[in-house]
Length: 304
Ligand code: CO
Ligand code: CO
Image 1: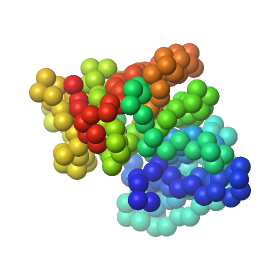
Image 2 (image 1 turned 120 degrees about the vertical axis):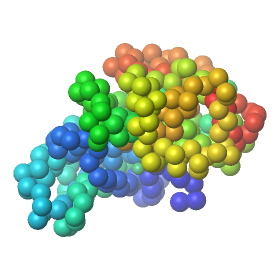
Image 3 (image 1 turned 135 degrees about the vertical axis):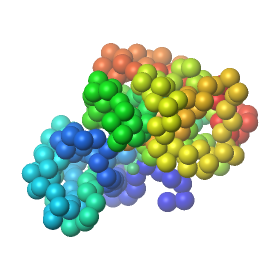
């Protein structure tokens, strides 16, 4: 708990540990079925980030039953169940309460061999950093609330958010990596900070290599920035140094809170091209090498 790991790990025997995690939130898209899918993919992601295999899920539902039609909840839950089934996970229960604000999510339990756990720390000097999904879902859902984003952009963002990090996780375990986390609420640079905070390594990010949804440039420039984005930046002010040449919109995108974002993986230099190639072969098309681990300045991220 001292370190912000993606999930809790409990060793049962010498060759079996359980991974437990929970995530729920308010709707970020209009379509209830998609929201359910996103909530499930997002909750499962913390198990994948640790290299584990999710097994069971439990629903968490907060629903305004007096003001909202129950058919909406049915669609949300259908999306959630379909997504956990796609992950090979069984829904074993859950809990629902009445709440003026709709919230939905899951508690997930998975398993892993205790020696195979991939932590968010452990990156080594010379490692390459791979990011597996484009950034910008927070900016897009903020613009969506004001109906200022086109259908195609929303569809693409939803497609990314409902995509499980299962394959990326499987491939990183197959190749062998040093560290991994998933990019969610603290934004890319927030989660990257967690990987090197209070360690003896630093990080170099090449902003031009970071994948993001192209429309988020214009949306960020128009000011559709979620409140969390500013908080994320404030919080990491003393750890992150962004070069003057990096455009403002890109700096914003790097702090944008993500829902069901990609994995951020630290892998040795010799293995990095292989892992990237395997990801591209398996349809994780936007995966890219976006930086590396350096000796100095330790505990800091330099964004060029
Ligand atoms: Co996480
Ligand atoms: Co989480």
